[in-house]
Image (tube, rainbow, N blue to C red; front, side, top):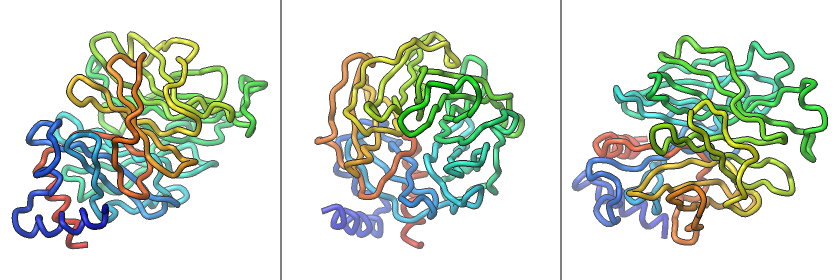
Amino acid sequence: MKRLRTLLLGACLCVSFLPAAAQTATTSADEGEYYVSSSFHEPADEGLRFIYSRDGLHWDSIPGTWLAPELGDSIMRDPSVWRGEDGTYHLVWTIAWKGDTGIGYSSSTDLIHWTPQRRIPVMDSIRHTYSVWAPELFYDDTKGEYMIVFTAQVDDKTSTGRRNEHGDYHRMYYVTTRDFVAFSEPRLLYDAGYSCIDGVIVKRGEGDYVLVAKDNRKANSNLRVAFSRRPEGPYTLPLSRPFTGIFAEGPSVTKVGDTYYIYYDLYRRHIYGASTTKDFIHFTDVTSNAAFPAGHKHGTVFKAPASTVEALIRASQKK
């Protein structure tokens, strides 16, 4: 069925350049926008992909890759995109499983053409850093600066006795920047007291922020939340009760109407999941109502103008 939908989409584009999803799906995004998610396929060596949706539940693939990884281990995992107020799309991603203390960066104005890749040395100044994973972008509009939130494992004295069953003790850190040229020193964002990864910040209102993250202990491996009055914290301890089952990671959050949609990778089941909430206290699992392209792995959901997405789809037909 997914293959048939893709073929039909291509036929419609030849006539009207309007994606089929825009014609048939119940519209929840603004009429001139789509929900878009950055994506990758295992083993993460092909590069940046995209999927898109009108209603936040039913997603279609945009064929092709748009930026081949060149940094670190030549992989691109956890691609996170944030559209700036000037229309620039900023992209960060994981460049290595271990042994590298930086992340990748590139930018684009159309999601098709990307600037040369640069390594951001987010943890180069912190000794004993073993790995840097899952960078996520967040724009702090109260300060006019971006936060890059990421997970790092630092093998120092503070990690003694706090490792999980795999010997890991991950914490969440962040750096700030206004121009993606100069960056602050890394600061600790959240220490759960045990291995915790994949942090995503959500702004609900003035002085009201939520951190969605994975409890990375083997017996749990689920998603939970914490709350703060500032994006940089402090966030509440401990994390909340889980709102997903076991083996969920890589959350991304967007708002559809008055409801927050949380997407995540159910990696042991090899499927993508989704939950909804209005208050980050009560959650509804809507995985059975959602549809995601096969092979999609966790990225970040953002909104993009319909003209940009339609141009991206047209470009994909020429690949």
